[in-house]
Amino acid sequence: MSEAFKKMPFKKKLEHIWEYYRVNIFLSVAAILLAGSLINAVFINPAPKTYVGVAFYDNYVNSEIIETLTSEFTKKFVPKEENLQVKFSSYYEVESDPTVAVDMAQKFEMLLYAKELDIIITGKNEKTGINYFSGFAKQGIIAPLDKIYTKEELSEFEEKGLLLYCEDAEGNKKPFGVSTKNTSSILRDYGGFDQGKKYIGISNTTEKADKAKQILKALSE
Image (tube, rainbow, N blue to C red; front, side, top):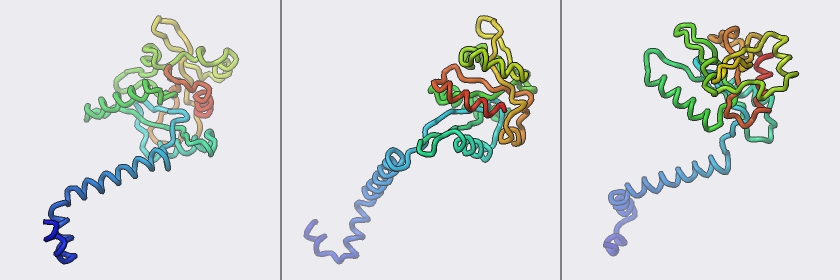
């Protein structure tokens, strides 16, 4: 076979190789492309990690606004030399498609317990009557603010009438949320966000409390 192959014209050799080895060629090219993609993603252009993760829950925010918020807050808070971002995301139920709702809830929980979500913005769903914020407070998903803020810091929110008190798992009333009624124009101006009925809380799983406080302050001013 090798002698016959050697005697073939160049064009015939190419046809022979393609006929018998094209699957191997495809697999080799795919492996090279995959390796190149992994090298680029890990070493050359790694995706930015999360400086602070901000989640809208039970509130649809379109991708354009999510990108704008992520870009604006990243520019404002993250030093240029750091490969980090203030990452916004949106989780909402779709009444016509329960599968999407379940998928959204699972993704939210996965990121929450992976400690990728530090701030949660939600409230009461007027259609269903479900108060997600107080539910998260009672379940221990959102941390009581007196665990994170000093009395002096909390008094500033109190004087502005921004604090929301909810019951914890033991039934004790504690400050858990900060109202978005005075929120920044970037957040206020997009459609569908009822700023008077939403509250900002800090995730109980956060390991970035100081950074989360920075972002919360900017969101509530």
